[in-house]
Length: 263
Image (cartoon, rainbow, N blue to C red; front, top):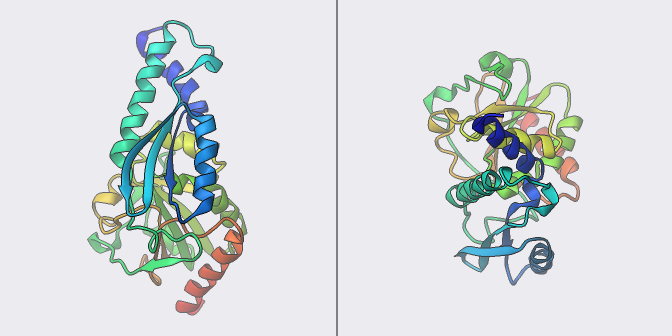
C-alpha cells in the first residue's frame, strides 16, 4: 500500500466516527439545557477547550485523542493524529458566531432581508457532479435552500430534521442544501451527509459563496426561491427551530412562502 493509500485508509476510519472525535459546544448560564449538555460532553470527550466568549455564551471545541477503539496500526496512528489535528484547525478557523442569544433563538424563527448577488445565478453542480441551475428552479413553484458549512455545528445538528421535512414537503416544492465549502472539504461534507442520513440534493457552494450568496453572513441560513430564482420573503437565519414540531413549523413557513407568490 502506498503512503497516499495508507493515509486515505486511515482518514476513512476517522471519518466513520468523526463525531465521536471532534465537536463544538455552546453553553449559557441562562439556558439550563446547555449546562446539562456540557456535563454529558465532558463525560464523552477528553478535551473541552474554550475558544471564545460571545456575550454570555461560552464556545468550546471538544475532542478525543485516545484512538484505541479504532485498532490502528503503528503506521496508521500518526496519520490519524495528523488528520484529527487538521479537522481541529478547520473547526477553529471556520467557526461562525452569531450575536448573543436574542439572535441565536431556538424558540422561534429569526428572519432577515438579504439580496442575491450576480443576478441570482445559481449555476453550479451538486456533490455528485450533476449540474444545477435555472432549469431546476423552474421545475418547482418554490425551492427551499438551506445553506451550511462543514464547520457549523448547528447546521449539522438540524440535518436529521431537515431530512424529515424534505420527505414531507408538497410535490410542487423542492428542497436542496448548499455546502459553502463542499468542494474544499468534499470528503468531510459527504461523510456529514451520510452520517446524518441526508438524501436531499446538496450543491457545492464554494463559488456560490463568492457571488450569488456573498451576502449570506452566517450559517445555517435558509432562503426560498420562486421558479425564476427570485427570493420569496426573508431569509431564515440561525438554526431554524427546536426539533419539537420542526416538520409542522417548516410546512407552515413553506405555505406562507407559497401564499406570497399566489400558489
